[in-house]
Image (cartoon, rainbow, N blue to C red):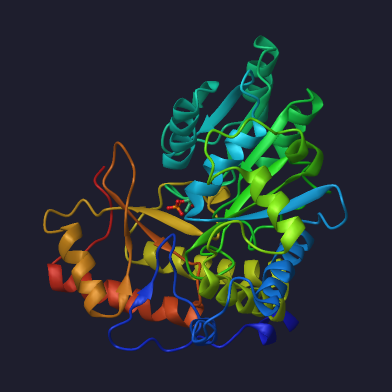
Length: 386
Ligand SMILES: *Cc1c(COP(=O)(O)O)cnc(C)c1O
């Protein structure tokens, strides 16, 4: 397969730098790290060119080149961009329907509380996806709802929510659609032609494999232009950030220059890998090997196969009495792998991510390390408690 030849080399991290099998920040390539060994003037044309190219390339990735959509980068972690997007997209007299099945949906509802925006939450718990039919029923029952917020890949469980199905019912009713594509954009196909979203939010340090420091919002330009006066915060005012960038080519306040330079390199590596399709293929190969190998050791996934994302997978902790997550984590870290605790409210669990600069060969070594870690704990079976 031609995509396989495009797969970039995986760098061997130094002893002190384990592979991060986490939801971000992630393992980055040596070339991306090296791109930060230069100081940029925030005023300088060379840096402004990086910013302009990054914005144009992100729009292109979303199938949103042309004048209908704008890309607004914003300093801070992904949540800063989510907060700015919600404040911009939802009118002060609007009402949002938040589709929640994990921490990031809950966080969006909490932000709306801070913003004083009326909202209701469809809470599906830890692992069930919101479905088109129930969203349709809620919208039909409450015509005051103006906007729907959905997390594409809910990173707290790893579920890939049915975006297309939900977009269809939201758009059929003429409502706004705000998508938190933080942990999917760049690795799961998502374009305006296929899914007519109004607002998409993502960040530098997830599937695009940059380092942390900024997020970005891709949104309908008419919606952005109509948002004057909505922002609750000077620094999170997306319309002002966009106007300033359009006028001067610069970020409104100090930009994370090194992060932007690294991200520019990360986008070039994304294209060299075959874009979204190439990245999806690599992550999917890693995920398939991970899940198969963990199941051979007795582990069970939280989700049914059809809801598994190629981003991150939740496994139940073994029911064996000798299992202890803290010790398991330390044994894996000593072998060069950092995993992530679970975020479920009911069952003990942990997560292993496949995003970042790693491939199926790294997963093979991880599986050996997991086997050794279980031996060290005296756990002979990874099966969860009944
Ligand atoms: C990572 C992530 C965010 C943003 O989290 P930060 O810690 O602020 O970067 C938001 N939504 C989802 C689904 C995420 O995975």
